[in-house]
Image (cartoon, rainbow, N blue to C red):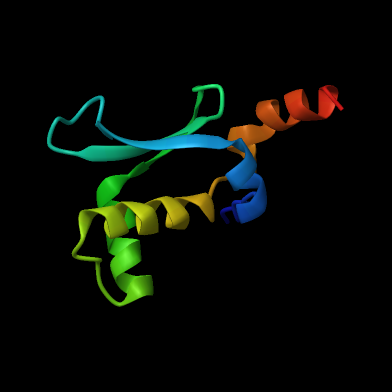
Length: 98
């Protein structure tokens, strides 16, 4: 039985995510990944770009045609599903500064 992944809130993601960058997959040059970086440019996690596009198509009723709109929707979608485990160290660092 698999455990459900807990995600951080969208509001917290807005505070700690610095960028989501489209990059080449390390082991498969035909695949793209969307890598999430924190505000200090440290990698948090990554998502398969095809999976995100498929999820967008399902939830949005299709993929936006305009590239800027597509990027914005993909980033927003990702910001709602950043796992807690991926930011544990960052959250501990933030808590330590309070």
